[in-house]
Length: 548
Image (cartoon, rainbow, N blue to C red; front, top):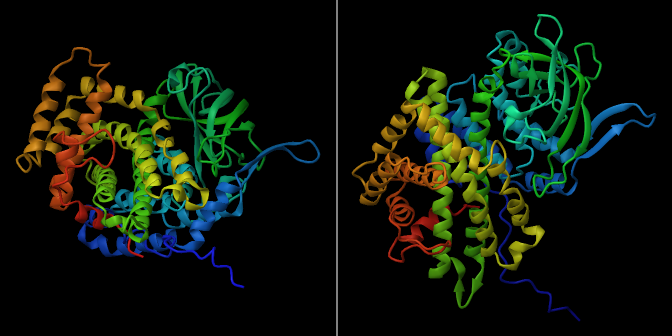
């Protein structure tokens, strides 16, 4: 007799076999908007190929396996020799190899490179987020190394290569290399000026020996690391290779791997330096200034990465609601569920639109030396990093809830997204660090505020709620009383105004209207799904739907 109790009905099919790029209308439009016309078709093909792979069953399986089989530390070989190696599952290498091959470490030297890379990073992160860490650090190391032309000439070709070579060997013999960094220490955390790792010079040739402990050193199997240490002249930036030119291993003692909430495919470690050979990058005592552009680049990647997690959560929620029936109809047609999905879609599109605008500003700085765009980045990057990464966790949690109990089980993929979602808010300086950095820019660099106000002013007069929010923001900026305690509130409003201005200029009217009504006009509750019912929510949801 056939078993009839196990017939499966009313379940959404898996969201697989689709183009992650082409299905994201906000992302496609952003790429087309910010790239020169002659670059658009090539970018569509390049990012589309990556998007189809990201949405494939194979890439999704790589992501699952890389997280179910986290890296393992091997401090010694069978004979007791110190080796300090980390073993990764083959899926990790496949993900990383595909990303490097797609140019996700190559932005600084090609036209429109930052927009193209940001779009690709946003697409590929949706397959698996953990391996984005070495990709981001490798990409961000380039401007720091350019402070020393000799080091840049030696390392930049490998950093921007489209070839991934795993294994520890002298960097000069590899077709492509990856970089990590070791900034924070247990006594200081984000306060890197409190670092105690010491750097002893070996003559006048820029070589040093480092001794100390790094509390967080991510991706310890990279070929090189940018490290901060105290030289005789103060806090200084150094390049630490894993393998020396003669083939011997540098002293890089991995004490343990962190047991993290999420990001489990990636190895984050504690490392001891004991007379570890290093090359100085930049001048002694100028360590923070040397790495400042690297920090800005990794912070922008935090924005892009969070936008990616939000987009994948929204895509999964809308897809589920389009197939799942309850209470007499398909969920996506239910007014209350439509409100929730539209609210999530607004947050996702605002994050994507802002991330690409900042990437375009980086391209403008690289190609034309635009001081206005440089000034905008100085203020907008920490503000966006603060707000977008903060929004990621509630968006993903609400998207998970849209799937009900199905979203709470590991097979849905949403628990992995949820565990990953707080990371970018912590990495490269948590919320207070970003908010205080915005205050620092406002106080020390008046050109940054001018650039910000010019940017949001481009949308002035198009929406009365945006105009009112700009006016209120100017009033708040003029009041310095208790400014530090108000920093989070101020940065939140700045970012919302910036997002609103971009959506008013570039998004469909129904998206801009809903964003301004809720985020700027105050017609919004404290949870998702509280948008004004008079808005065109169906169009907002349909725009966010991934087409399989």
